[in-house]
Length: 308
Image (cartoon, rainbow, N blue to C red):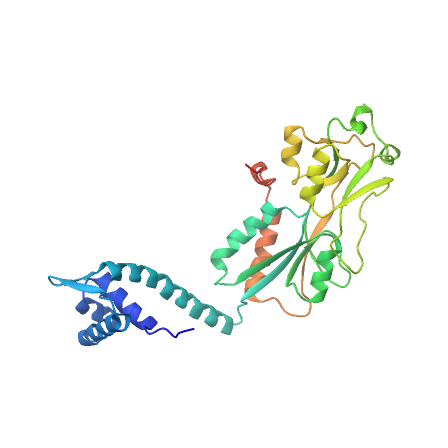
């Protein structure tokens, strides 16, 4: 890759000349002599091989080529400044990246709010978000490849901060045979029907969570797939209310009238990597996750928009 012939300082000098309206004004802002500023711009034009400025009376005016190059250079200088700021923050202990693993059943809307609030405070710190199911979250945390984890059960050996609960509802399509029974249901009624369950993404010790007594069972890889299957009449499932809010409102899904166990409300917990202390950016993100977890989830954020 060929090294650039023009330096960032030269681009900054050109920007000052244009923004201030002349070489003398730019020299004053840059605390340099006017001759130094004039030489810098002249040298740039020689190096690039195109005229950047023309003198109109006493004012320096951009040429057409200069206008194009100047606009591109502003982004370049801005990115370089951000890079220097990031290096400074890292020197002070600020993280370059926070790795967050989340159980797929946790409400996305709450995460979006927390991450949106984190962005202006991040100082360039990136967030690497990963979704897992059940023990997959635990494995990622214990492997040391996550700084924070949101999980729907207690992880042994870790002290988690309690978040809110997520409501799971037993549902099926309104025309499903279970609904056509027209009465309160028992678990015995479910045994002969197809149950749709979400595959645990963990490899080492996958968990079976909830009632799994149906003789027929389809295992799928995501909550969205499970919701699509059940909405089409293919079995029943326990699904998070926030995931299926639209299907419930539209009548595509209907809660099963179970005499017990129709609703479950597992508590979620926020964990951190116990092998290293929280950095300042991670601590800010922890506080924001806890703040927006406690806030009510408005109906318009309860589920993702339907595809067009």
